[in-house]
Image (tube, rainbow, N blue to C red):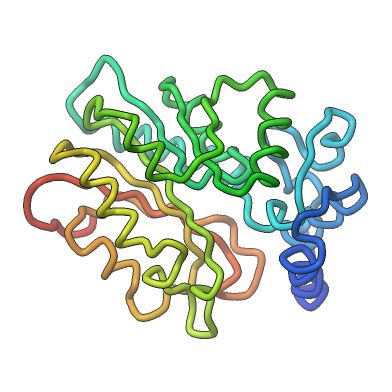
Length: 265
């Protein structure tokens, strides 16, 4: 009989507070990475990026900051999202080419799996030099072809002209004060999600595209609906819920195009 792992939620929140606070810019040890996997996912192997589980990361030269360990989109979730996006794209008119644009890439694992599954080039931006350096190391270690820039997301999208409707933008701006007792308020991220969407629309000049946004599972003030009021919701991919409500991740996929907002499918 399979027995579900017992999660120590109090220990998790203490660990999270340290990794997002005093240890946010510190490279974690192998033991700490395994502990993170156990506390968050119930198994050290649950913390897995680029196809490499936590027990193997140090030996393979993978370096994760404290905050990245908490904020990253792990393999199990990233591959599920990549599959969902592939299914959405299969329902669109066929194209010869497209691009993946990871605007706040962090670990780069989200963009990595989108590129692997969809077969399109990935362009990524990360503004924080400490995060960028760690991610650059990791992508080099796995031989990734992601075109990673130490740059503001607006600089990246300004240099990437639209290719077609399969173009997919991954967005997860820093949460900061947006992470409230009422849930995640997407109008208070840095920058606010509506502002990011407006920048994407300007860069696209009317050309449709897909947007995948990572949130948690507790949204404040209907801010997801408000931010995407003029977009079409096409898919939501929840992560395996192991933590209390408000601490688990979800990814929502929308289509940005010309025309009226359509109902959820």
